[in-house]
Amino acid sequence: MAPDETPTTAPHAGRYPRPPVSLEEAERVWRELAVEALRPEAKPETVRLAVVASLTRSTGARYGDLLRVRAEDLDLGPDELAGRGRVSGARATGEGRVLVRHGKHRTPRRHRVPGDVVVVLRHWSVVRTELAAELEGSVPRALLLTVHHTHDNGTTVSSGLPITRQGLVLSWRRFVLRSNARQGATRPPLPTRFEQVRRAWVEAGVTDPGVVLQEK
Image 1 (cartoon, helix red, strand yellow):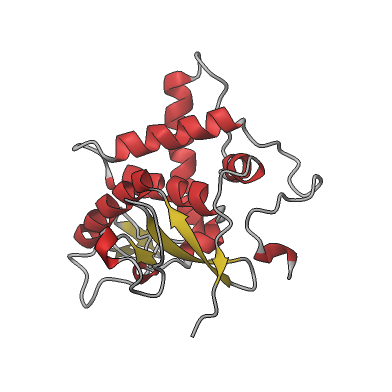
Image 2 (spheres, rainbow, N blue to C red):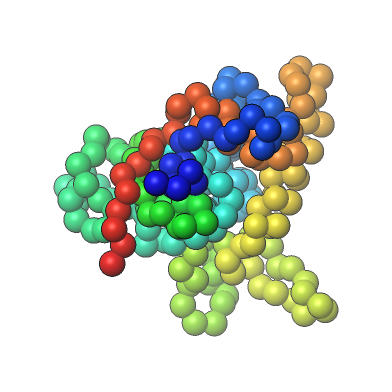
């Protein structure tokens, strides 16, 4: 098995010179985003960032892996539907499933999704449908979509389109700047690289290793 096919394997010490945050800090970030995302006044960007943090905590996925997740790769149905669909299977009450294609080999793994993450993902499903409502044609298959109108070479690009890796990077940095400005006097500042948060969960064994699937 290639090294990148196992999402829970800790990276080599010299690969990422910046150390991960503590597990306590990573958990605080996730809880803060999950709570904020479910507030009635929550911005779509906050909900999307909560999805990114939740799926990363659940699966150990990197940005590139998350960008490959499609809406149909989620199984958030009620318990009586367990056992149906390509990402379903035996699960505890309230659990869901997600299919993530990890690494450069895009190894498909089915991961468990805890009930509190399922709640966030259900909320994002409603938000993403609203974001894509003004697009012509069908809603994009990508799970993660843009939440703002943007400009590309003088052309206005509508929200509701598949987001890029750079978009996720900038979204995390905006959250970090706001969070550090608001709470910088009470705790260490958050890093501008989300990878340092991801590694805290991976190295602590919080993420579900998943089951390798044979895609049809």
